[in-house]
Length: 177
Image (cartoon, rainbow, N blue to C red; front, side, top):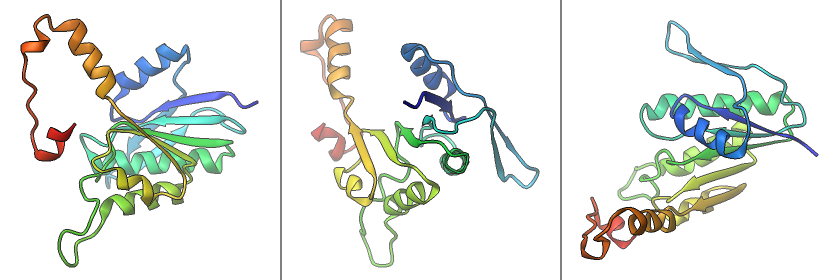
């Protein structure tokens, strides 16, 4: 039975540490750095042979750098003979580019799905995808988790007059949620 190894990308180390603490695990050793030409370099600092690897990296902040770092981490673990690699991506990068809205427009979310698969990911865990059709872009397992139940519970427990509150959405898609 493989052990779980949990790695953090550089996008949100605090979130990764909270997940590790909640699971009673230590974060795996990984070193990320930039070469002088701004190429990303990743060194996995421990053996992952036969292990079940989870990499937490959000698609926020420096999106392109974080995505490239995630792809390199996945590939590094895969070629180091990990049993399985799961990418935990709370905010899926390029999720808003999920369809052709004009001619010659790319479907960048599909490209990201392809890159994750080619890098060696076996499973993707994400949250509140911009459109559920993005799950269909993958040939590997995708779990799209929803934050709504946890958010509603937090509101009920922490906002005394929650029944008299209004929640505002930045766009029509968010208004549905």
